[in-house]
Image (cartoon, rainbow, N blue to C red; front, side):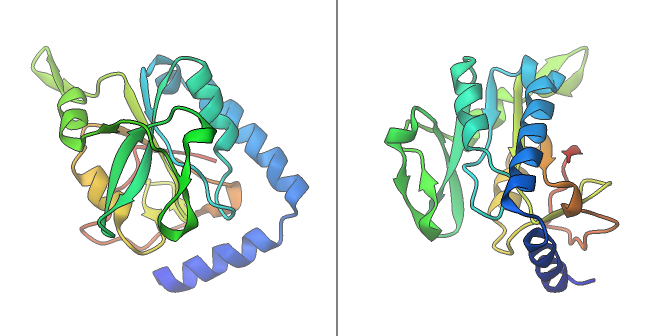
Length: 192
């Protein structure tokens, strides 16, 4: 199945699930994220403020921030890139590109994050205490991700190669195979 067909298939699948069922799935996914060892160990969590057709992360963002995590959320910058900003409170969010609520907190440069995600221990590079939880329309077991087609996350994640990434999706969004190209960045793991 090509990317366009897979996006349409996932949209149709999501319509088959009622709001109550999706809320239960959201709660289950939130628990899995909060119990994940990498998330528990992380001081900084790159996350996203969900759109209506994504796994809801609003409560998760607030819970992680209340737990003392430094939560970074993306903003669309110059129409082609994502910048990362500290989440403070929902009251400080403003509607930005595509009608998405975006954080107004301090921008954290991707270059600074890239430097933080790399440190040497016994001659090997390891990710620092940071994890990225990434949205997608669909994922496969190999971590391939189908986004919305604009490439925002692929461009961002290409600049953070040492960041441990976790795709977050509903079970019906985990497919047998996601078409990928050389510019698509695969997730290290997927929670569904």
